[in-house]
Image (tube, rainbow, N blue to C red; front, top):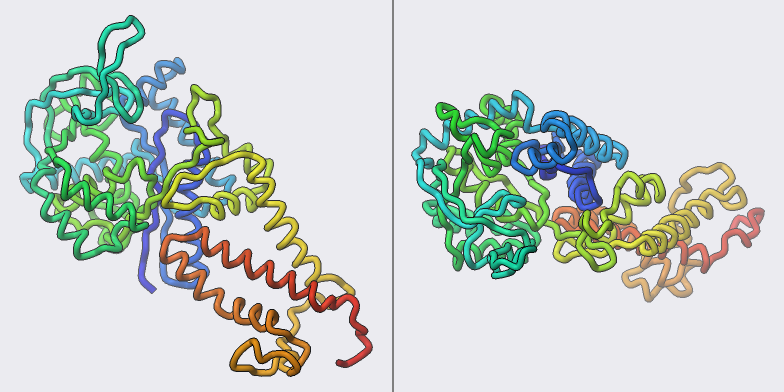
Length: 460
């Protein structure tokens, strides 16, 4: 089998984990476990924390601590949350690690040597909480707390300020053609399909201005200095994204794994992963990742999770309350990558009780009941009960089995291929739907035949 690196995004270390973080990790973990179960070849699952940027500085100041101390604590929270939820990661990368800093410096050198970087004067509307410049099309006119006119981000409502500074720029505009060609030649590169189409539209219809990839060191100290220019800090686009290369030993040993990589990411970071990252890789002489798997967000009772609303769901509490398997099952069964999913406690209880405790638990109890299966063995399949038929509707009169029983046998026989197709199509929720259907069919089989009423002394 071939090698494959599966990755979650690296999670921003300015606050504790929530269920959206865990959902990203569980999707990647499920894919990793399924590959391992099938024996598809060597695999790695990477995750970690992004410890760069102004928001880290601000969060540390608010907490009365230093950025390294804050990152050490929050990174530990993420590692514990993922371990507690049985995420089988093989690599945990922190952007503060020496191996990552070395990889970023080397990658920067590759961009510089290819002519993809230049120093330019950059000015525009800068949003400090989002750490990015925003075009006029993404802004709205509002009034601040003092009633003065101001501009805010349409998406987040955060206020923006006109900022001028000299930064290093990446020639993103030069990569519109290569990015279009990449997507045309590899339509499976971004899944599910609606997200692929979204990126195609960006490349066809929207401006693709050059990207500011550094910040003045005086303003952003929490990051890696630009090699040869200590007045500038390498910005997050380059720093954070290179984690996927750091994990596989860039710049020396990455060839064993890259570009056999699949990134699982939330839709909010789609542009970074599907436009900026492939362009940066091309500029550095590397191939884009094999696939970018995109999922939507979790809301809580129809509202976006936020600290101000006090509705952030702590995965550690959920895992404790609903069990590891119960909560993993809920997120993977209810999460549909193409659309936002809503969380509330009653929904978890209803699903876990119905499909795990009642249906699966009931089936297990029936299958292992001493009155039916005293030796607790897997009984062999009885051909006499299931004579061969061309069509399950012909079953009547040939044996004890009826048409529904033949449908169950066919369901179970086709299940491995169905599940594999669902996993390959990044539709894990559909794989679990198929499994839940088989469990229901199996319980119906018991109900129809009531084996606990059969005379065990009668050989028929």
